[in-house]
Amino acid sequence: MTEVYSAALMKESDAYTVEHKIPARELMLRAGKRIFEKINKKGPVAVVCGSGNNAGDGFVIASLFHGAGEDVTVYLLSDKTSKVGEYYLNECREKGVRTVPFDAGTDLSRYALIVDAIFGIGFRGEVRGIAREAIKAINESGAYVVSVDINSGLDADSGISDLCVVSDLTVSVGGFKTGHFLNMAKDVMKDKVNCDIGIDPIGRTYLLFGEDEMRLVFGKRPNFSHKGSYGYVALIGGSLRYPGAIRLAHMANAAMRSGAGVAKTAFPASLYHDITPAVLESTVFPLSDREGQIVFSEDEIKELISGVKTVAIGMGIGTGDGARKTLDYLLTRFEGTLIVDADGLNILSETERKRIAGAKPRLILTPHAKEFSRLTGASVDDVIKEPVKRAEEYARETGAVVLLKGTATVVTDGETTYIVDAGCPGMATAGSGDVLSGIASAVCSYTEDLTLAAAAAAYVNGKAGEAAQKKRGSVSMIASDTVASIPEMISRYE
Image (cartoon, rainbow, N blue to C red):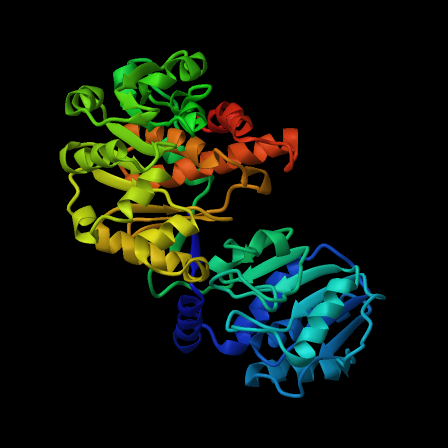
């Protein structure tokens, strides 16, 4: 289990550690040493330092490179530093490490390695002044770049920046922060590792979903089992304008490829001949319709969900009267797990929040930022800047599990929160969310912990997408390529 911190929690935990366990000077020495050990590159070396504790880590690193016989220069953006940082700056000078001020126009192109120690996790807002010049110089240098704790200029919570260091390696200190994964993080960090220096969290952390969690969901199945052991699922969607959505959710049996025992595909009856060629192992369930839009029939929906453990609704279903009545019926009558996606979320956004909180089924909502903006009333910009906070608040208020899609996905029930660092640019294509709904409906049919199940579905979808991109490229891959890669992704954990 890998813990992920908010910037505030890391600051509090760091301060507590200094006060009760490890003196500040020793903690800074540990950080510098651990980062130095992670760097597998030789000089000449430039260490670019700001004025805070990150600069102190940089001074320790510079001293260690000097001791290893490397040509190292410390560039100072300020004549001020923290009290403990000043100790290690003086140590550098006493050892003969070259220290010079960084000026606008300083050329860093002669260095093979640059250590970025300008800003730490406390940075917010816009990069200004000499720091802006330094970041530009680092990015234009052509050197191998290592960022200390977080890329300077990048918000440690949101992973957003107007300008930040682009690193080959980022070494987080104490624990990963959400900004190491969200939004722009993948674009500005080629690789990232964490170094443990003895800081323990003094509050609730988030969890990075990974292989240990996957093994909790996808293990070896016993011989003494049958299709009913792994649940019946139903997917409801499709319309005349969007017939592909429900096909994708079940194309190559996305739900069954992800482990469901039996999958039912429900769609407007007039689309029967378009959809059935893509459905082999699944059961088809044509629904009454008018001009390609579902017409609600209580008898049909009641029959559809009989014996079903998980229902996913919304994929291309439209927002007509039939879709609205079907969703309303499920919210008040269905006793299993209900996954709401796409058009279903748009319908749900017009529903009173207290009614959502009082829904009979256990709910999983799978919005992207714009859909979540409609659900919550927050601006898209606010959702992007504070995805974890916003998702947790909504989950606590409604009792739903929120799967907020993004560069990294946030999955939370308001108490347990997973960061799912999986996915790729090639998945920015129509149908990726429909595939996720198919996977999630399956996983939730045999996993009781819905937050874990939803996170596992997001991880499978993201990693299958990554595998598809390797084969097809980010420009040419389509959602069905992701479906085709699901089996190889899941089979690793059986």
